[in-house]
Length: 624
Image (cartoon, rainbow, N blue to C red):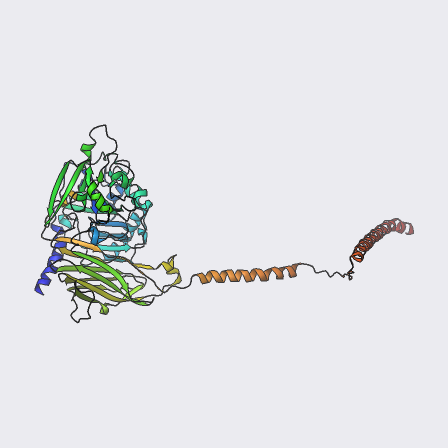
């Protein structure tokens, strides 16, 4: 028990060391911009391309924040309008496969995710809530995303999981820090998000690595994610750095690109070669992984140098391409890198050979629903520890208000990896940290954070029972039968090794800062799958059927009634017509003749009447 408490104390201590991080500030240049591209072949004929654009602006207390060169003005105005010191926004489509792809450089969840740290004088919860809503509305317009739906019904204040990564000045250390977190798992990432995201770059999409991000090839991937991170690093008010990091993480499936041989190139992935580097960039580097899955390829052209990095007992070799040196001459206009499989290996791949990770990642997680029906169920989160040492686990759940969770049903069962079923043992894993904030209908979501120790070479199943609410008919989305989303859970742990671990250290800002960055432990964050629950849904087609039926009945009833009420009814007497054909002809002729005689007689009578009326006047005069 003492060892477990020390592990959790160490975990929380690692998450709190940000206050001791020293910023690397370059005073000679006020603003710097760096662009990086990392290409890693993955298992199962997949390729991961990671773009990172970093802008760092050194400013002082008395400097105007409205005059910037490389930093977008909308980002600089955040420091003027809001008390935000750190901001994270992620827009993701797809699911990252930890078992076969390892761990990404930047962890994101499906849909839209946003969290921010606020720090300032005289801040209160009400003021932070107001600034949080306004901040979401601002970036809803900047990124053309549905962040305007972020409000108090889907926002929480994490207590243990998310720790600040910014540095305050000496005078702000004692001020209160507030955090807000929200996720929109229903958000869909498309072209209208990519275009404004690229406009925040100094060179836009005209030149540099951003020119490769063509929407026709980005949104055709198996996984794509856009990220934006802003943080301030201040040693004192006169020495501060505003750091803006934009990331784009893509995973291509070569089989969808009709590459049966497994060969690929930058032009095949992005539809074009690289047209140069951003003229405003201080560095433009491309890193290609050469070992593990990359060792089965030959690069054309070869990299200018190789870097061997060892981190946490795990060695990775990268080939480096410096674009500023590559485009020094005026001859080449487009640059392309091709990954070619040797002929001997190509026959083996065509024969069905697949390259997978020989050793799985130390930790992976999945989540799913249990139960049946639309009234109640259970949320299950399964964690697997493939390492030979126990791992401290910190888990956060954000359950929407239309799903009621019962804390007394929370259980953590474990099993050995050699077994396939969880036994109903009374010795469940005990959580060491528990934070629970119950939800409120149509006002607040349910917030749950737990911490426990996961034994080595074992799996744990976390279950909690929930009830599904019946919503009002105006609260259902347009496609109500599609279901309602429950955002993904977030898991944080400390890894003793860095196998399949590529995250950038918290005290670094470039991908090259992860080279040889050995630490006593490595903070790892994972996201589970988002869930779709089927709430009790009324038959929304019934009002349509009622409207159609009512309109039909009214139309059928109104026509005859209106005709009878407005038309004059004249009864015509008809004589019986003969049945013989010749007699019918004679009858019709005689009828027409009699009708014509009647008309002539009537006209004569009218003339006689008119003549009589004209003679009355003179006669009366003579009589008088």
